[in-house]
Image (cartoon, rainbow, N blue to C red; front, side, top):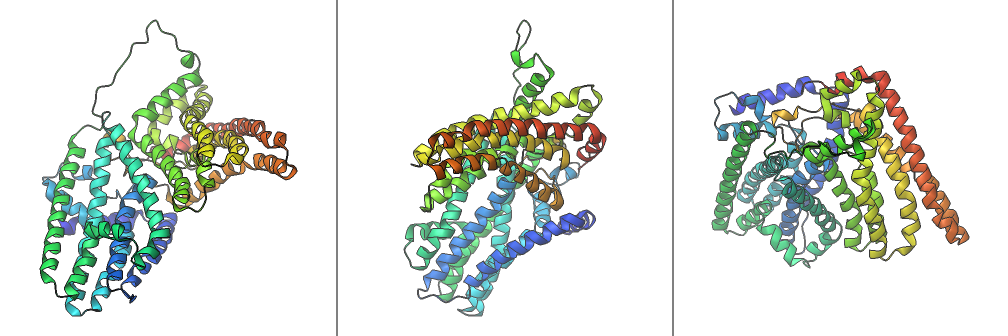
Length: 524
């Protein structure tokens, strides 16, 4: 069955890799290869302390393990070329299905790049002789299996959590913890690396050696010093761990295929005799529908939470490393910007449901404006609270005019950008009724769409330029009035751009609605 799964993966890739997707693979592969070669070279470099190579390899391999989990969380998806529901009707046990999908997961650019990185163990072993080199080669393969299995188990577990009404809080907490691990990742690369070389980070090194990702480096060093008993123990422990992870993944695959995508009773409240000011208009009805959908749809929660967490990581990391407190003061602004990155595929989330909007007279306008209001209601409260708090906490009171002026401009522009992305660069997603993990949705925007999404996002950043100009003029003239004049300017710019870009999205939806429906309703 392993050969069948591998050939099937190769066949799907051969028929699906076209144009921009190939460019994306090549571009991403080159970036990953540069990082992998840098990791591999650590095995060549002789250090003054014999333990330095072990410490660096164990620490860098821990970074690779975290990256394998963090990257899909940050991007909201993983490799779903072959999905477990494709094989639901076949007489395959959980372990055989997991083994076959694991073999198929090893076919790809990311696994090849990771194998190059772990090959540093082989070259490190060559410094001791042929036998330690073979140990390094064996552990390089086993650690590749380890990172792939850990990534698969974590994604499947998070998918199961976020598909449950009761588990969404715990799932979002795990998302936050995973995002915060990026802080430690960046801090380790920037600050702790030199400390490891100088032998000044014993606590961190002790942790990375104990982690399974560091067992390979420890085993190669043990083989070089003649401690073959430790090599056998580490090898056996890693094999057992791989077996346990494979079993857990198989159980999670069976659960995802056989369990309903939503577990938990919906609480339906009767609206008889009640009047709600939100639903007195078509726009209000769309707002209410969107807010409920963002709360209930696991895929939308993942798309919004992962980008918001990345904004937190980008701002908090510099303050931890002692570089500057200014990014922390700008946290609310970054949340407003990052909240657009993966939220701009609203019609892709809806899929064929767009048909109802297109055939209902007057519905496109209410739909566009309602989605804009809903996005602002989701992002603006958090961004506003952070903008009011973080400049004071970071001790940068001078940044309040900048932050409070730029925030309304970016929120208004973001409400327009989200709809522009949804109508210009929408892409299909799998049917959620197939129990697909929200962390591995299988839908891919493609390289061309990604570039266009970033280009549209730059429009949002450009919305802050008038505010920056006004506040900067106040700084140069030492005028508090001009500085705080950026706030009304930001409100005006944000409102204008939200209305204007929403109108452009509405025109596109009206003129090219059938083509958009054909795009987002494609079967994946």
